[in-house]
Amino acid sequence: MRDDEASLKSMMQRAYCWDLSDLTELQSRRYMHRTSALELFFMHQPPVLLDFSHVELSGEGGEEAKCGGGDRYVNQAKKVYKEILKQRKKTSLRRSFFRNPRRALLKYKLQEMWIDRRLSNFEYLMLLNSFAGRSHNDLTQYPVFPWILQDHTSNELDLTQAASFRDLSKPIGAQHEQQVAKLQERFEGMQDVEQQPFHYGTHYSTPGYVLWYLIRLEPFTKMAVHLQGGHFDVPDRLFWSVGETFKNCTTSINDVKELIPEFFYLPEFLLNRAAQDFGETQSRGRVSHVVLPPWAKVDSSRFVHIMRLALESEQVSSHLHEWVDLVFGHKQQGAEAVKATNVFHFLSYENQVDLEKISDPEERRAVEAQIADYGQTPRQLFRSPHPLRKESNSVPRPIFYDILLFRGLVDERRKSSSPVFGTFTSFPIASSGTGSPGMVVGGTYGNSLLTISVDGVVERWAWDANVSSN
Image 1 (cartoon, rainbow, N blue to C red):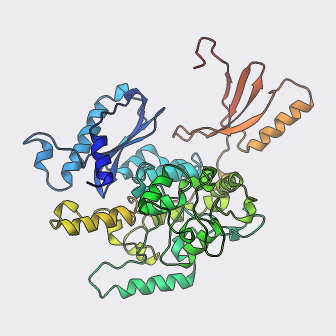
Image 2 (cartoon, rainbow, N blue to C red):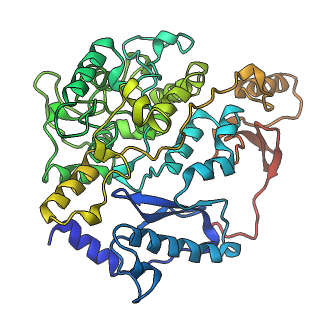
Image 3 (cartoon, rainbow, N blue to C red):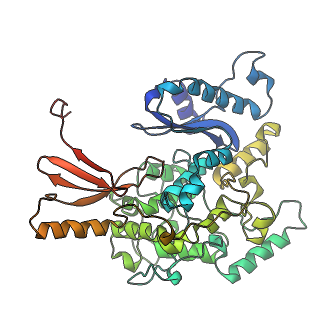
């Protein structure tokens, strides 16, 4: 028995409990292109992904027993989904859907909220990933984000210039005409062979790419070592430079990886704080911290901050819908995908194969390996062109939209010796998922903490003496 099979068997023999009152979201998930899983999101606990393809199905003559192929797993997941919804009054559920993300998108008006600038670009991409079946709990379907910037060589970065940004209307592997010509030649050359033609033999998101990016963080370090048979990959093939990675992704038709969300909020993944010995390259020296663009000033926090500013910039806001069309929308499949040089191996798309109908064990293992290891395209969420976002000056802005305006107000009050916050700071908070802004400013006032959100809500906080410090 393989180590991963033994680990799975051990986990299945344990009992797990979750507090339903803490449950905020419930979504169906695909696993190996089958809707056999559920993901549960909680307020105070990490999300949980449950796959039912390893669960023995109940009873003779029951609903599950009547179904053949992958449908039996769908019914098992749906049965659990319905049982949880029966307890809805005991939960804190805000969102739930099973197998129909398009309908759920309409129900929760996410597209409308992004268009009206009630959702940030980051929030919208995270929600699209989630509704399309991407999850931090599944390396085979990890959330995917776009490369935003193409300038990784300047000492200073100008986010008002279009030249600083990548073309979001084109796949990352088709940014240059010479690359497009090679990809189209490959596609045309497959028309006469007995397989479905594609532009890309690799994918923009695979488990290997996720581990490649996150190799400096646990548990991904151990997972990367396991993937390579007990050791790190050779130093020259490790993630060592942001600029070189972008260059390779835009000049090689065999490497077209996009980014992961961590590029926009987690500077620690760029640092080798555990002092791992990744070895020495043939020409660039020892691999340690990731080499950042000059404009990051050798500061991973500054790099991530600028990446986030770039993601929320007007340049990206006016073109992000084009990337959504490629990854989640009408240019993901079919004739529009062919025109956009955006066709991947057919096994990366859902509904292309029914594993239960493959009788040959060797063939089935090969197909499963292709699906698991070489990339899965997200569920298609939109079948028509995605609308543009409204211009920033056409929608009302919440109070203190620019947090620096509030800082200036506070500084003026300090100069006049008027009562004001003793100290001042600004910090992000988690969005409620309803479009509420994810930023507050706050400061001390006597023994209290005062906060003002960017939508104008003022709150006063104080310690409860009756609550234990533990």
